[in-house]
Length: 64
Image (cartoon, rainbow, N blue to C red):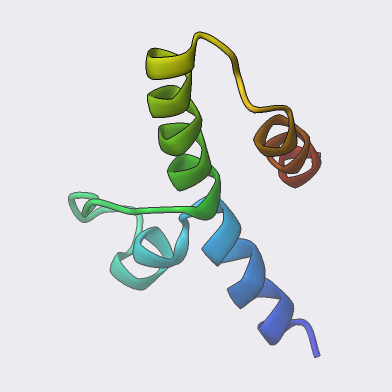
């Protein structure tokens, strides 16, 4: 019952590629949901000067 939960957590944290390749192999580019949200927030911050509060709340909740 925990395997689907591990897949969802791997999607959030970007560990799916790490888990598929193993610890000894060179890491591939791993895109996670948190990384993608932070990239979007960085671009918005660059152009508007404000960090989007909704993205902040989601990233904070995912990191918890």
